[in-house]
Length: 457
Image (tube, rainbow, N blue to C red):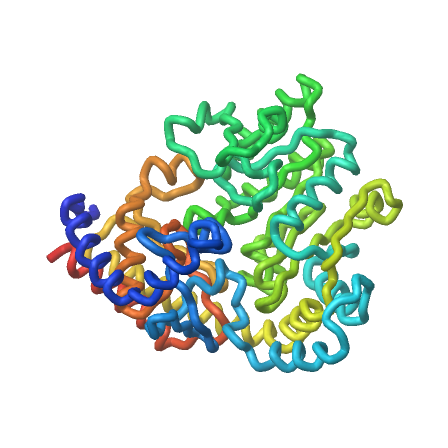
């Protein structure tokens, strides 16, 4: 039985670590004062915020980054998981360097993007592909394709999952437990202002890891004349730390969506290329109708993709659905992606990532056991986390009931003060890169043990 940790002890350690971290970030503080004059809140995206000021990065190389204060870190954040190739990867650099003098943008198709499509089709066993510039664009277009194919407006998503920042999916993401609603009738809640009220009911959330609840809700919507166009979901949830599918769950979802003629979309923006060569589709052995990619695909350049079956993507080929974008298939992004797919993310690279993940998960499990801390470690491919809960988290409800946000924040502070960069202010997973070494893994585990030691002293 894990020990009960005094909240006052967590708060005391957090205050100490925050003061130490702030003292190291004085140039970031000064830069914030300059940046906020014309850059809203001093950042390019709200997810880059950190109180009392953001951390500004100067450069990165391989598995390390350095902030403007000169603090060097092993990077386990990796740009929200985009940099599985490592920073300034020399193979990708040469590919971009070779392409640059040939032209950086045409808004026309080049040979490289054809080869990228061929590579992705071989990995995912989905024959038709289109390209975008981000994960949000990929999921937005995938939903439009599903709606165009089915002629339906309603969509279904998993409560607590994030699928980008367009209106259709900015629903029921981060909410308080008392606002979730009944397990079988979860509330559709806008994630912040600016989302038209009339659109909110078109997105119906259901719990993760409960296929029966999904089918029950689909039946009800069908009876109302609102059969969903699609279910969009991550095969493994990646913004509650990491929540893996229970045995048989994905297979049941695949069967249910086929039964009711609902398009199944796997959002692999975070898992694609990161947990296997063909992401969650390969790892769990369940093939969706549409898959969406981004983040790691571009090797550090903006790029997204949508892959689908011949039948579903026929609405794009016929012109029934317009899938467009000025920078889609940009030649620099295509060159980086092709080099990454063919020369960086090789079978040997995935063996290396699996070895590193085994090392970090076993190291964290040892610390949890030795210090009797509430929690467990979970990892898959380059992704993983420590979930601070004495109950297994299987969905958003159990996450909100049992997971400790205060321990997450304290863990982040300990990492930052000991040279391990993680995602500021969020319960995010770690992302390893092919350039990480056992020494980097040990630095993470050592930081985690330092926190455990101080908590239990």
